[in-house]
Amino acid sequence: MPVLDLENKRVFLIASQNQTLVTALSSKINQHIADSTIFTSRDGSDVLFKIDNAPPHILILDKELPKIDSVEVAQRLVTQDKYPQISIIMISHIPDTERFVDEVVTGKIQYLTDIDDDIKFQQMIARGLNRLADSQNLGYKILFLVKGDTLFKEGELGKSAYIVKSGEMKATKKQNDQITIIGKIQPGEFVGEMSHINNEPRFATVIASHDCELIEIPFGVLDFVLFTKPAWAKALVMTLSKRLRNAFKQ
Image (cartoon, rainbow, N blue to C red; front, side, top):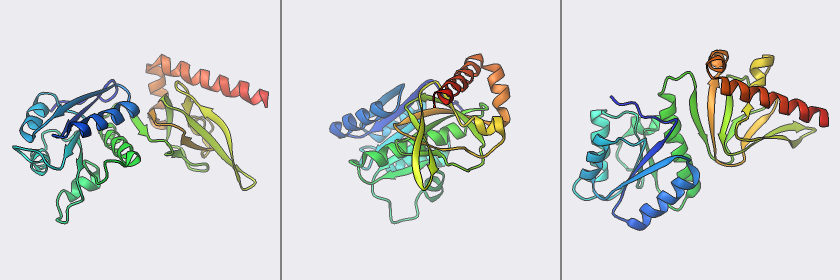
């Protein structure tokens, strides 16, 4: 069973006869997901052929496809379980019948009922990619957030530290019943590491200011991962140094 490389590339397959829809979805993907490779298909038979030769991370199925319809394509992928890592987004109303119940619960299959709902589409892509990241046992994983998503909340117990690969985040703190922005986290910086260093709950709430891609490193393997990846250890030192400088400025 092939292992899909999620760290260096993200492969999408859009299946639809509607070229306008394909163009619109491709534009949305490229706008929000870095390092995207997008393939297209116009019928269900071609979808299955392309999956056998180059399985995508996310398959987007329009509700009506010739030769083999979208439901049958999804059914074959689910039944065969040949590529369990593939996440499927079906452009369709949620069916009345109890079809794909387990797959919907696990996030393998999602239903996009409104193609104009950009936020929902972004959230589905993020959920689909995060589902795949959860299946890769690397000691760390790639995490995708949509603008407005909360990474963690003030007072929570920390379990992981993060490196921001792309996007921007803001740290906020509740002071005198008011929410105050206390800092911004830029690409290349760590966030959430202080809970590990101080063994204390989260000091602040961190929210995605833009669509973000992060590397999540569980505390249990943080020291080992930093030892094996000097560039990440350097990023941690630079982050701590920046915060120290900012503290003296206040």
